[in-house]
Image (tube, rainbow, N blue to C red; front, side, top):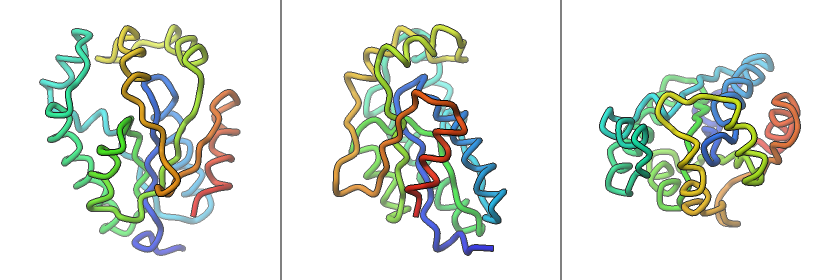
Length: 175
């Protein structure tokens, strides 16, 4: 079994509706199936209630709103890694500054960027109901999105295929 403290944590990132949670859970299962200790964390569960309430009302979060949430996410990644498991976290992490905050406690963070068109993601969102993230916030998600840059450890993964195909693409580029 690989030593998770030496394996980079994985951030499954993208806009709302890109499949972060579904792909993150499937990726975690695939890592476990190949003999790694891995734990899935859905960053949505770490939002304070005030953030959930704001999003439920259709109000985009500010950087100030996100600060305590990103701190909690960063701490959770570090705790999972310290426990001996590889952390796989679903987190929108739309801005470079958010990913930089996560890297403060996890400098080897690998980003699996779920890359899809606004049309594809809007179509997927039309078939789901999220506890507090209304479809009306999709445009603000794309407006906020800062794609990962060449100095970030990442793989851009097309999401037009099945979950298994998306996971296979991530596994192919994952350190």
